[in-house]
Image 1 (cartoon, helix red, strand yellow):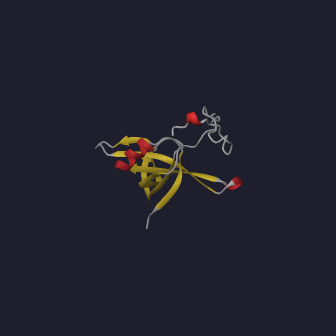
Image 2 (cartoon, rainbow, N blue to C red; image 1 turned 90 degrees about the horizontal axis):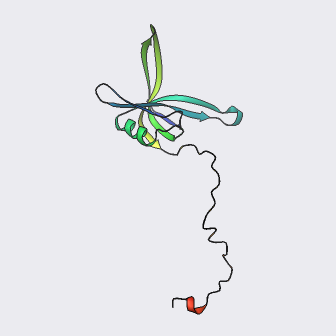
Image 3 (tube, helix red, strand yellow; image 1 turned 180 degrees about the horizontal axis):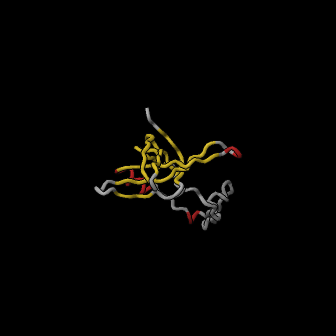
Length: 134
């Protein structure tokens, strides 16, 4: 059985490309952390997506920092560069779930222009009988 499930954030934006025959392919690195505190370690896992999964992910959830869950399989491929054979181990995603938004940056607190609607809760209200609609 070759099944991988990962939850992490895109380390950079997902890159969308097309093969010479027009097939959609997208790729990116998923930052996956384990441990906590001083023992926290982050791994960067290469992810490859094909077809509609590639298109949808690149369009709707491919931004850097976006949290996603990936389901797929491990795949090893090789290529030659500078006369040397190189090997790549990557996850070929069959399903990408958009489970979170981009990491929130520190935002200044916004004030409510209408104030607290419950500020006077429990206090008596003075309404004259002419103001009542009945």
